[in-house]
Image (cartoon, rainbow, N blue to C red; front, side, top):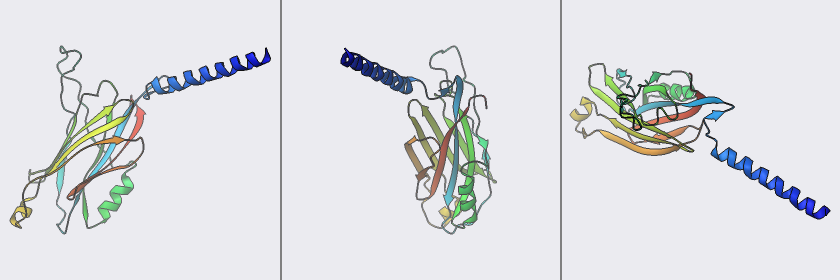
Length: 207
């Protein structure tokens, strides 16, 4: 009888352990203790100078692409979210090191906030122009929020007129990559002409 009770007790423990494991896996990661969480993506784009002088540039803070709501066609436009210039954050030490080097030029340091569900179908777009209005860089970023986080990135860096005069190719440089992101880790996307450093963290959806 004692042996039977012991077996039943062990089975109850296993069942409870299995239930807890399933709850951990199935409960959405963006909901903790009843509080809704979103994500903040902080990123920094820099260019390899290769002996070129620094040039002034300005940014047109691109808005998230206006898209039609897939589930309800009667809703014409989903509310836009904007990039925000961010000169403080986890990547600030990286920005300072790059800015202090004569080999690199920081083109943009900023972030955007994204809420699971409502913002999943949006694409963040960024355009950088020089002071004379010439297109310097354009990029699009699409964050997929599920059990795992994936970021689709497409960046085009346009050559300066001095590059064409020097006899080098005037073709734009393309970086296109899909990367799995881990929370609070620093990720680096590399191209011979430029680079992208980014990190992602949770934040209250109300921020």
